[in-house]
Length: 382
Image (cartoon, rainbow, N blue to C red; front, side, top):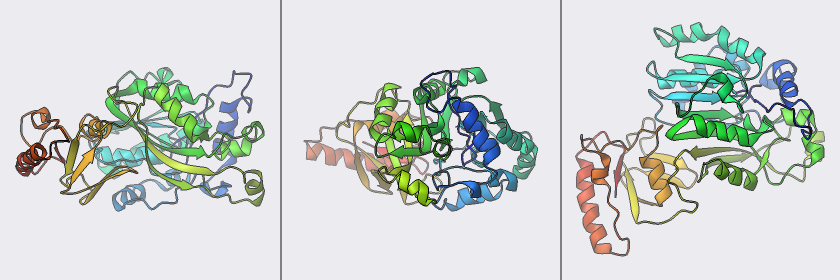
């Protein structure tokens, strides 16, 4: 199954007698492989992207084949910054739109793997591999499409600790076994890697009647996860501190659907989940801070880590211990490997007692001088 972003919506094998939809895999695959022909056939805006992508992503989308773009069913933009050279996995890649956008952004030195369970969508994606390779001027393709279930990545021969970044666009809600999806994502991510994905969430748990509705399931609504259940499940699977990047209310295109679902609010939301075992359950203040130098491509003035951390260039920005680790120890952003010298970044990391303004001021002067020495590093740390 595919989502609007070229991500498919894979679901769990329905050998579970309690599965409200019966054979979920089969029904979802039928909905996205046969019932929907283009995004115009959708009955809600859950599987469409209303926000305007930044110019460089719009350009990459414009370079995708028309047939690939026409079969996009995503609910958000699941493309973070600093992608060059990364190994990326797209869960539920569908017809491959996001895979090909990522292919352009990771460059010829990077690679992208797309996994989907709907053969009709993969047929479209695979048909245009060479077309995109030629379009980008690559010597050989840097993309690969695998047929399989995102709950069972081991069946696709995807190894442990093998990806810098995982993306997914409005797909996980279609899976019956969401815990299996998150556990598999955690397994294949490299230490410091992240799952950056957009999906559908609800203000309360959908009723059994709603969950049995095949149209609502295909439209990404009946499988939506209640906010608090998602947070708890993510933490259970090892993603200790889920970060909400953005969210938007989903609108119904049908009065009938509106009447049936009037008691529940549905949202399209983007989350970042980091594979950082050293994160803590709660944000703790250790007196740490960062200073953004404005060097992340396409983000000259402000770098947005999540909905609560919009870091302006040239300003000292206090952070909690978890945020500090996300900026320093991640595998996908590559923004804290050095401070423009050959010395390890730890040479510039100091924990200062926040209760001592005088020592903090002296350290600020020292660190500002160190940061000023480099034109390459994204961050100054103290």
